[in-house]
Image (cartoon, rainbow, N blue to C red; front, side):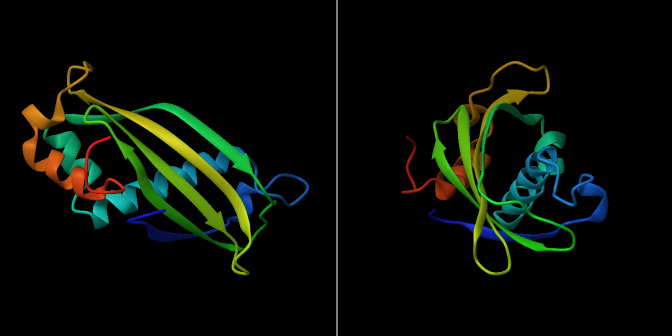
Length: 143
């Protein structure tokens, strides 16, 4: 994972099931928390992007559950842009418990849409945002 950031999430009691294990649906929420944090640290605040008319729609998610997590563990979520194609981008996630054991890995694929819900050419319509996204790509270039 190049250009990664780390976001920490503390497992909440309400996120667990009757067995005391984190319910699988919460990992997708944690991916979003970490992704929003990652972009904010890169100067790409979600609310500001949406205010400018650029929406990032999730089109695919994949999850690999490695080990269970429980309340009140702290989970380090490493997030990085795996690929940027101009109209779409892919995030990679790796989650570890406080002992450094990988508990989860995943990917999310996003498409850029305008406020009208149609695909948008970020390079043409949002050149400043495009440049920031290019810097996040693994080698600084578009795939």
